[in-house]
Image (cartoon, rainbow, N blue to C red; front, side, top):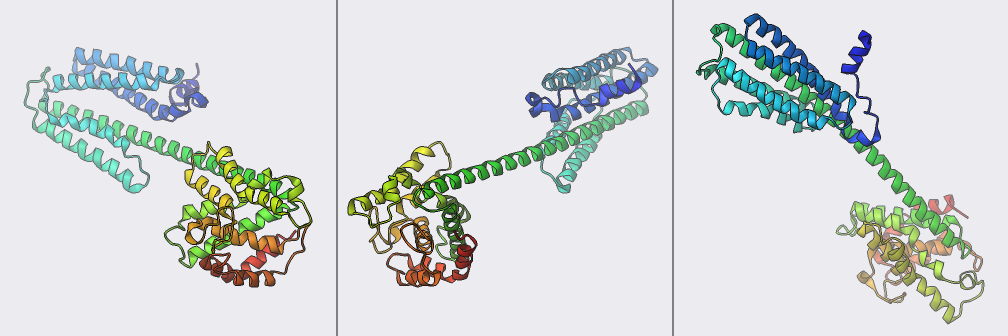
Length: 422
């Protein structure tokens, strides 16, 4: 095996890092590998020092550690999911190492050893930014200095080996500094890797959420277009009414109307529900929807049922959707968009604030487009005439506040109608 291959084996990414089944843990392997390699180098250096000091027990201990860390690196490199047992084994080895260090240097057991796990706990300070990075470093620095001070100041038990005091202190300080430096690097690398992984996951989730949102929106619009086409409308009706609704809710929000209802979530749900307002028409026979002459009372009664049927379709077709607020708004838009402010509408003849705001908004948008658009059974009316008609219906067919907002954005409504003309 060439030198480059040896280096790559011990420092390169594990062969399974790109395996989708291991994706949740792969980010952890790189810093852990570095940690084991650093410990491998440190214990090799300790072996040399203890050989010079002629301390057989510590030589044997560090030889075992070298073999263990070498095995950890190989296992981590080759076996999927091995990071967990490696961490446990490394923890046991570190604990044993500390016991031997206490024996060798004659350190008095005490609460100062709680500072060691404190350094590893800093890995859970995962937030990004310089402040949190400095905070992790400060915690480890304070814990390290405090630990070294305490073990030197309270080093009053008999050491297992008789070493000159200055040699003992130097070895002790070097051991602590190197160990804590490795710990700091390791925790920093883990935090960095976790932050990167979390960022990747957040980006991935956001992208998938946006994709799903766009797909749902397109499906709803396509479905609505198919339904509208049955009564002689084009896809432009859905687009126009949706844009009218969007412009209207934004104007109501800007003007401070219905503040207790019109939050960002409600506005979004109203705009998303607009294409579904006539979904119930799918249950109405073509002979009625496409009739060019005047409808009989019986036929008109069947037309009225598209509101009730629309609510039922949304309940059944979208029952698996967990967004209850959206479903509530969508059902209200489908069911109540032909109700009138004065109670003269259908299907229930409710009035005023009994009619959900989302439906009152949809009512005026749908009414406007129904009059300005050409149909097989009627000619298109000029927008100026329709706006006057709407003004006359203020407080009768339409909510006065919604009517005023609609008239305030008359120019914008005109532009939408012209840009999306049939």
